[in-house]
Length: 357
Image (cartoon, rainbow, N blue to C red; front, side, top):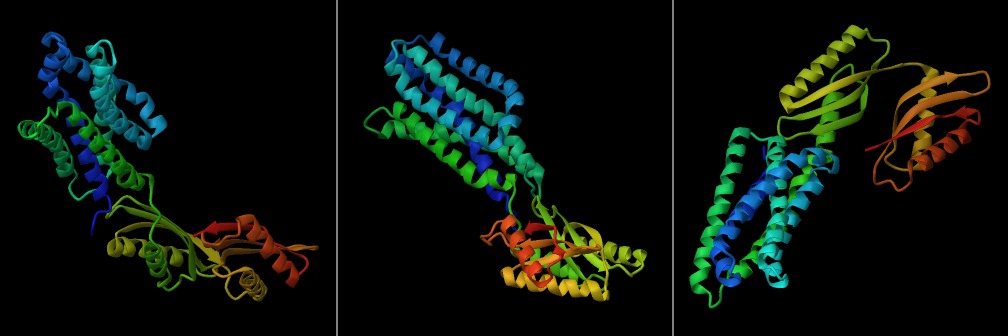
C-alpha cells in the first residue's frame, strides 16, 4: 500500500536541507565579507557563534509558543524567516552605515528560522506513519549533510565559471529555494497531519462489510480516523433487533470487529442500537418518515427512530443523514421535514438531528 504521508516526509527532508543552508552558507562568504566590507576576520568568525546562540535561544523559547500557534504557522514562519534573512544578507551590508551590523541582523533573522526548523521537522517526521520509522529518521538527518555538501559544491562550481562574483546573488537564489520549500510544506506536509476526509470508497466498504453479517439490520454514524497504513480507527452504530438476545447480538458485533481488523486493517468499535422489528405502529411511522424525506430531497436517510406517544401529540425522535453537497442548511432541512410530516399527520412532532456525510 502506498503511504499517503510520503510527500509529508519528503517535504521534511527538504526542510533539513534548508537548515543546512542556513548554517553553512554564510561561512562560505567570510572571505568575501572581509575583502568587500573590510571587516576584521575576528568579527566575522563571531557570526557562527551568534547564529548558533540565537538558534539555541529559539529552541528554548519555542516550547512555549509552537503548540499555541500550531505547527503549520510555525513551519511557514521558519521558511519565511530563513529566506528573508538570506535576502537581507545581500541588502543590509550595502544599505546600513555599518556592514557588519547589517550582516548581524540578517544572521539573526535566518537563525530564528533555522532554530524553528530544528525543533519542528523531527517531530513531524516522528508523527508520520511509515513502515520503518527508524529508517525515516536516519534518512532525515542525512539530508542535513546532503544540504551542506550541496551548498558548498554549488558555490565552488559557480565561482570559476561566472564572469562576476556570485557570492551576493547566491543568497537570493538560496532564499528562493527556501521559499519554494515553505510552499511545499504548506501544500503537502501539513494538510495530512491536520486530517483528511476518508474516501467514499472506504466509507462504502466499511458500511457494506458491517451490513453483510446476519443479525445486523443497518448501520450509520460512521466516523473514521486515518493515521496511515495499518493505523485506521473507526466507530459505527449497528442496528440490531431489539427482540434478539443481547448476548447473541454482542457476539455478532465482536465477530465483525475481529474480522474487519484481520481483513481490512481497520480498528472498528461498534455501538449496538436495538431496533424494534415487527411493531405495526412503528413500521407505519417509518413509512411516513420515508415519504417526508423523499418529498424534501434526494440523498436523505434516517436512523435511530423512536416513538413517544402522548395524549395530545405523537413525538417522533430520529436522526437524518444528509450529504454535504446538499445546499439547504441543517435547520432548513429540519423545518422542511417537519412540515412534510405534519402535512401527513397534523399532531406529529419531530425533534430531528442532522448528520452530514
